[in-house]
Length: 171
Image (cartoon, rainbow, N blue to C red; front, side, top):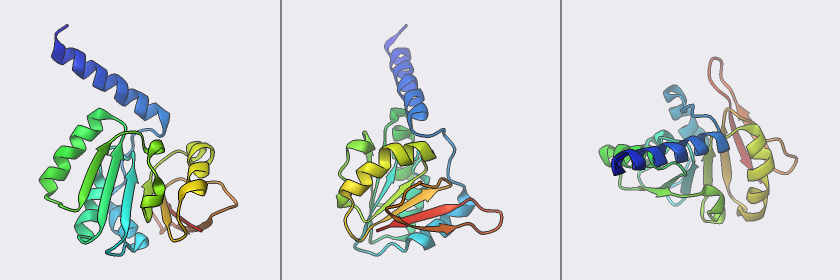
């Protein structure tokens, strides 16, 4: 096996691991992007973080529609990191930064809005504790499709006919 095949194999294995660890790969639907942007109501000084959402689709859309806001996207999979780096470069957005790394090791207190598309068990058992400990007083968590079971954060559900649910959490 030559080095290129070995590198591709390693990227594939890491990507498979990242798929199984948080959520299956299902992208946010294009028809929900405008609604998500409207629900977020991102202000020019606010910082937005998209966490492990595979292709940075939401971050690129948010960056285009909020050019004065700081947009960060973090990905665990090297494969999707590379794909998203290329997509971001092609989008010509200057207000978006992409990071390869573990989002569970990032300090969320630096951000005003977090966007996730994670499975309910992961939200409840892993993310909830971290959010409760780190988020500042004026933040919003946007969860696409999946509800986070909790009795600590305020929840607002948005589900127009024929569209996926979007949950907004705040304290």
